[in-house]
Length: 390
Image (cartoon, rainbow, N blue to C red; front, side, top):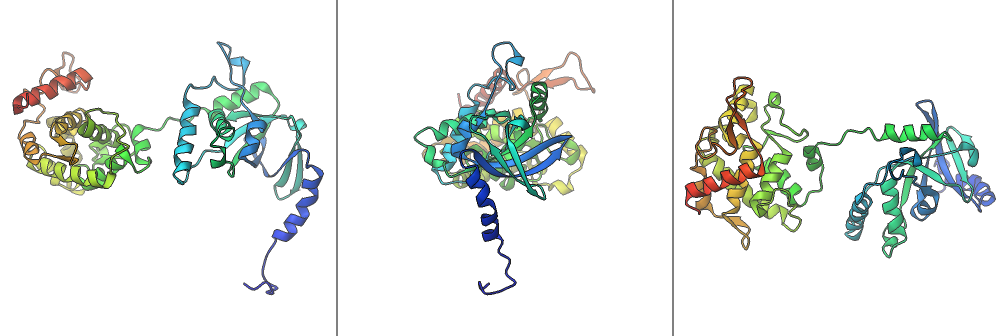
């Protein structure tokens, strides 16, 4: 629009002109625009502060020793602030987006001044020396603090951080607030993988779920255990452990240096070949989830160990025996031999290691599955011996 258009709405000059006297009056204090609101019978205000202000404005009061009442927060978790700091550094150095959740703090309302401007808009004036006590976000605050005062400070110096400020002066209520805010449910590993950055083992896992027939549509991307009623057999965590074992023989390797697109495609091709050649998986692999019934899923998991996490881990460790690190590929002929193994639960290969007799059967099951490291190791050795790889 042209500047000469009388209908153009441009409030910025008027707002700047309106606010400037306030900032001039309180230039010796910290002054931030804010939004006031109420929640749970509490008066609160939302402000955004520059990164450079955070180290001197916010303070954590973690408890010490064996005395919870020695502070408003829990004792700091060793290493957590460093994890947050490394997350920011990694993303910022690579010019990638990053995000931290809103911090929450409390302050005695008598120690600050809130200038109401109307419709919940306000200015928050915080005199020098007044500290905001963290209710939630002590590790984030420490991570930001350490970054700001470090040689890497310029990486985040131009960022702002939102704070929800609770107007509260009662110590016991502040402790209760911290407890209440800490009662969030820890995310399941599968959900963390589903929302993880598309690199390393996370990226490869996500790719396999889309490219491998037996995983596609049959993998629970949210929960820690697969929901059979939804005809789901695997979880993201099951497949991630398998992927790590296939490339490194270690279930928890993050595979940070692997080219996701290349190795995902290679492994997906080999897996589709394996599952189509294996008599115990061919039908289930090639049947769309829409054409399956719940009892089909239950029967597959009952009859074949490849329908379980421990079976995938065994497969991953055996696949690693065929892996050529130089070409980042698996030997196709050896995979065909793997497919000829007896992967049924009743096979002698798994008897006494991952499949154990159950002296106290429940639901008419005369066996139980063991996923212990020692059981997996014995099962892998049994399979290698059967294949003549020992």
